[in-house]
Image (cartoon, rainbow, N blue to C red):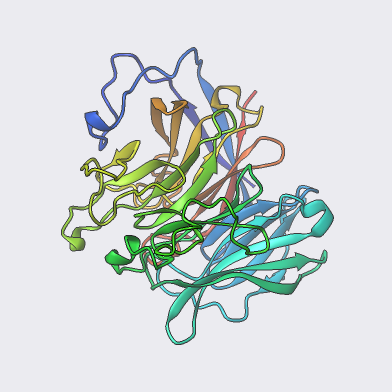
Length: 382
């Protein structure tokens, strides 16, 4: 079913001010160079879902996705299958947590490995990443990759994605205990780097420092939920939720970061554009909060002007953000889908270069209609 909706993307003019909510000091806004108008349609791929969180595409084009209560589901030939592929037996959905990300092993075509990240309770609340094998019908042969990552109903992370080096990177939240993000003996508030089987890589930045957990790649994160690598520069980018008003640090300061081995991203010592020696300020900051919940860097050919651009869904901001970078420099950005779909969570690139998004209007903070939640596909109008 196609939503009767066509959206127009217009290049940012040279004289345009910085986008609303982004401090001038946080970003250099230049024209989105040499672009013409681009028009597209939004098509409904699946509806009536319950907080679809992560999306992965199988080699045959099937779309596999997670729902927060613990279901793994599949769309075949643009048709949502009524029965779940798998139900996670020990998931505990609560507030922001539950079944979260899904990723395929880089060699999925030969090993059929699927990775799930989810929250559970056992003498406390934790997150774990578990590897399964997809047998064409369901998920079997579970193997725990990493376990007992501190969690809470809020600030539980978690993205689990494979980098260009073949390693598994996992973003974790601070579990609403701020100080854990700076504690080097805790997995909370970190980026973790693992071998696909859960072993610790010998070249991790702190592997020889006994004061640090060897899995740690970066620290000082509040709640990063977007993770992607740029195909040209190889840089890792992350989106991260900034402080809420009740934390006494203002409401907003959501971040886009370039994340590198061994670096400290400051939470809770610094946030937004505050600075401290030995800690990293973000590439971009968003105040008021937009609640960035994902990250995708476009590689396809359907939208030539989008090549290499960053896209992420905004929950509170009810839009999708597009950011154009040149290496480490932001050269332009613009909001898309403003308020048309409600809370946007996942953004993913399909096998044919279309852009897929999921809504999160049934997560307790949105205003769902009788079609929510949905997975939608953005396709160009030639």
